[in-house]
Amino acid sequence: MNEIDGQIRETYNKVFYEIIDETVNSKEPDYDWIVRLYAEIKHRLIKFIKVDSKVYKQIDDDFDIELFKQMIMNDVFNAESLFKLVNNTFNWVKKLQAPIRDESTESAKQRVLKSQPEKMVSTFIKEVNMCIDILDKDMFDYANKQKKQ
Image: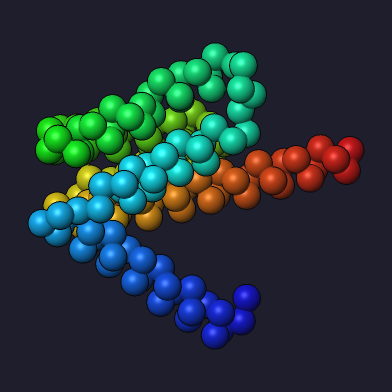
């Protein structure tokens, strides 16, 4: 990636996370978009797992999209709910990734938990997706290594 591509990507990401902050903190948040972002995290985590496996079922149950949607739409999603969601998500990332990644994933989780309240959702989306990007890359590299053997 050249310097201009990097600057474009950086600007895009900055604006994207600013829009998340504005959406979450507005008087009338776009709940559908927030639910879609959460669902995307779930789908990114389960994409490498066999549909008929126990782990797939556990993740599917733990990431109850409809319950999440109902909680935020009815304004019952509070700080405790967010704390549980953050812990649950990062715990699943840790379970699925190589143990060598645990320390960086824990650091990402701590950045979320220590972020300013009005930026916590965007920080969560950013940090967990960065961790899943690394998981994706590791899985891709592993699959390619297996093909060569």
